[in-house]
Image (cartoon, rainbow, N blue to C red; front, side, top):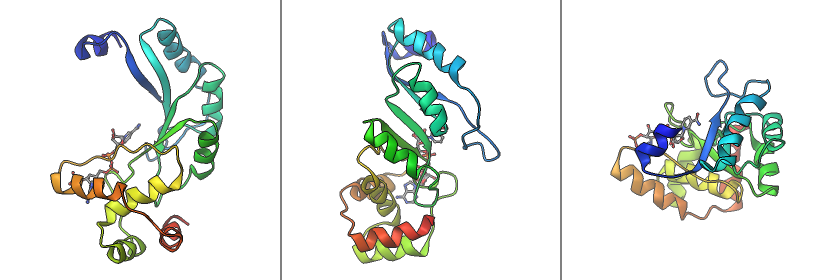
Length: 179
Ligand SMILES: NC(=O)c1ccc[n+]([C@@H]2O[C@H](COP(=O)([O-])OP(=O)(O)OC[C@H]3O[C@@H](n4cnc5c(N)ncnc54)[C@H](OP(=O)(O)O)[C@@H]3O)[C@@H](O)[C@H]2O)c1
């Protein structure tokens, strides 16, 4: 923590996520209390070293447990067109004004591939990954995207995707991927 502040030349970090779970695939929530770990971050927040707290790879129960200790501003879990475990959690966080950051929004190390995605993208004249990001942005108002790329061409496709408008028919077709 102090190393981070020194290296970044900051007095306080804007937001710090407690990364919790793992499981068989390394990216699933694992049941159990997170109170002790989250209380450490809450203490650093009280000391003024962290402005806001988030949590990552957690269940709805663990979000609630964290909220009983200190306010949570964001939750970062594995979620995308094909991985829909957090559908209910996203809604409940949206109602509370808490940001949801889907990680591996494009599938991460296993990039998203699907006939429906290609079909909608072709219809819209857009790149499939841009459509996958557009779907996430249409999914809920509290979605905050941090897609990764090492390619300028992909970056352009992805930024273009943010401005795409998906029709109810497009959304219904894309929704079938994860169901
Ligand atoms: N909290 C956690 O435990 C956790 C875990 C994982 C990730 N994250 C965070 O989540 C964010 C995203 O993760 P990520 O970058 O690993 O996964 P991602 O955004 O789902 O996928 C990145 C992959 O998609 C490819 N890609 C990107 N744009 C593309 C396009 N337009 N067409 C085709 N392929 C495209 C990239 O390849 P190219 O480089 O060739 O474009 C790269 O292989 C990061 O900020 C990361 O730090 C958090």
